[in-house]
Length: 329
Image 1 (spheres, rainbow, N blue to C red):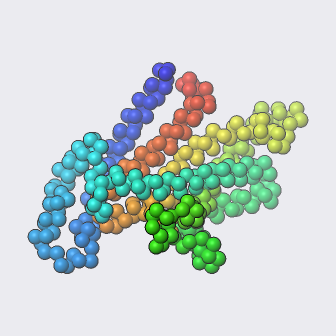
Image 2 (tube, rainbow, N blue to C red):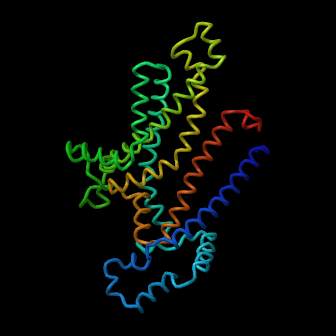
Image 3 (cartoon, rainbow, N blue to C red):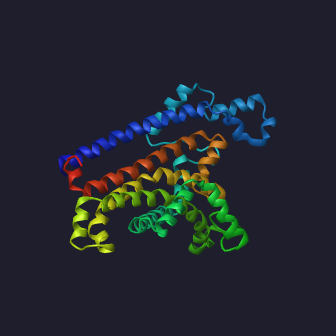
């Protein structure tokens, strides 16, 4: 392993540690100033029947009777040892809950991420290659509409059309109602995943398509492409020989950088379709005051987004020798 790769890995490790430290501190502070009372959210509708003594016992059991600074130090110390705490809602370790929900979400986000990238890249290329035609205007108009469309609105629209009116897909959830876990088939899971995945894919197309279109137009107006045109190259042959290389790397960067938008969109899409993934768990943890689970999800989402950006940097270094050798572009 060369010195450049060692320096790259060390820098990324230091940045990840600093990021997790900043995110955990900010998340803990925001939880403390939140108007949601963890004890009231934990007890629920029976709060009127809980005596002050019982409330004190609940606070003592979950460590809520200690000062915020002491709770943060205790939580951070356990975090360094790999312990994310115990979920107040599920009465299970936070790491176990996140792992179980991540299995549900990873398939949804992977399909959505792949479809939005491929469709967005293809749409951007087609628009640029047919500049100022009706095809270009149609794709740009479609992307502008999608860019201003909220994820939850698109989810509700697809839910009404394909689940309620046409009855092609289930209304929600991740598996059929009333079916034992061992009897759920892969086809059942795919049917429940199609609408949430389609929602995230449709919304994610706009940014990639518009960015790819503009980048390809810049490439097609460059001097070496003009020289290739002068030699008789044109159309899709020109794109494959000179344009594809120029737009591939920026598209890869944008695609992996969209991890944060993908995770945020999954929160809304999973709520609309009641899909049992990380997004729904995040909303439930916030509304019900499950501090350990909420903090664990915040840290996991930070690592998730950081991983996407790191993969993009790795691909850049592997593909572009100028970056690998530390030279300026």
